[in-house]
Image 1 (cartoon, rainbow, N blue to C red):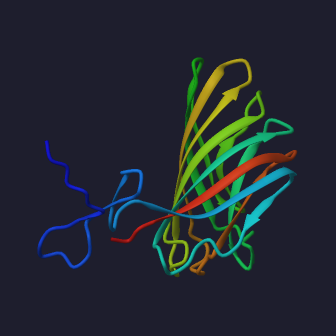
Image 2: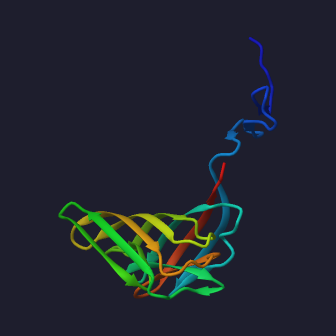
Length: 194
């Protein structure tokens, strides 16, 4: 059997390769996927801010948040433009489900977006998508969170939110617990535009 060695595969009419293979044979589809921008690790802090992670390079972003906390607490998100935006322009609606109950909550005119909860085990994992933070328009946010809730076991949350009180161009984010301190890692990615 013959073997064809190649690193780039493309349609004959394409200018750039459509599929790129690395030295291990792993394929990357050109123009699609997430691009890693920043990893920030932190320990026993009451707030963590990342500056310069949003730019004109990408319209939409995603970040993962894996943390432990000193107390059961909501986890808040604020956007940044050199300083943290604490205006009352944040709104969110949250749906939660655990083995004992389901429910909804939310708020409008807040100074933060709820993106999760650390629960009774003081652990939390969240995936958060932020749409058009660098553009001068409202900024929709979608979050999925997992934690262990006190007395009821595993709990998941789905949150839809936005920052609509300002049309500023935001270039960063701040994450913080509403009480206690947090330890963990945030990884920020940009969605390729094409």
